Length: 126
Length: 283
Image (cartoon, rainbow over all chains, first blue to last red; front, top):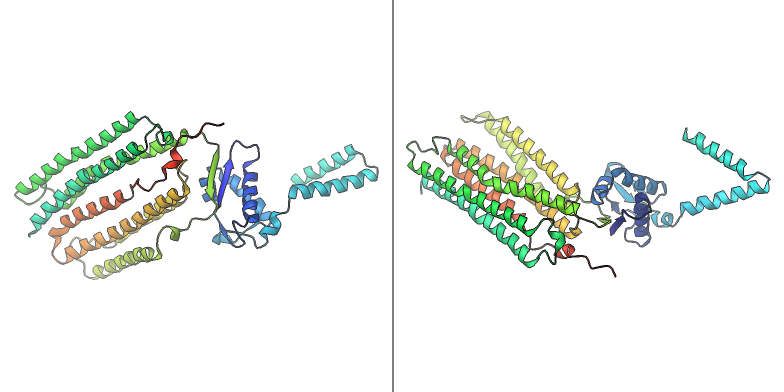
């Protein structure tokens, strides 16, 4: 299974990497339990900063597409196929749309929603 | 056949093999690639002009030939020597120093190759990069048998050092040999790790070629480690059995074997040259 990264593509490099690994899982080019290259190996092969690959791996691990087993390395998650179908962006958009609709129905203005949302996000960052 | 005749034969063979035969084989391999894969059809293979490449090949040839008269002079000095030493110096040391001179063109060629690959990388205008989604493991490149053999050789050597230490012969360096060998083997471990995981030096190289190249260099490092251990152990045996005078012959043969193994990695006949072809104009 070959990964192809286009550095001129406007899609961020870590996102390209995530998409390709998810596609490989969905096309059964890699199956649950298959070992994956280390962050350093993939970063060197693709001539990328290892932080970029680490970010992609971290997010894939969060999405339960891959799993790290200590010193033994990184493997495809047993539920990877199911989890690769989840579009986090779509899910967040859908949930936020539902909440915003509820707020509007309750009479909360958009600027009030924006202020509270901004405050919550800021307080989480601190 | 006495030890002197053996030494003359080994030394002559060392001069011919390392400075004449192997460089000629390498030059003919490179020229063959240049003829069958010309710059007009395979521009990505030539980040420098053919003239620059030809000049480098000439320098390599001349530097190798320079070692020949030096070797012959050393050989003649040994033949005519009254005390049976090259330039009144220890035979083994003289052979080693001469071998360094013989390896200089190869070291310079490797430096040029590194620069050449750097230029290839700089001239690469492709925006896409590829990688195989598979981890590289040591046993993808070396058989468990060879690995076990190398390990066994190393531990057998440590055992031999421990055994001789109980009743050492004059000049036995004892544990220093074991320490030195361990350090060199650790250097090989580092080199093997580097060749397996370092950045791609040739941006166009196919994944199959890269795997083959790694396999070849890892195998060579394993063999060099085994040969080096065997060579030092042989030196002990020769010294312990009062055959120290054959050490120079063994050194010469060992150096020739190292050169042969080194040249084994420099093969160009199984490379996928299609990756270096000119890109088709966009329609």
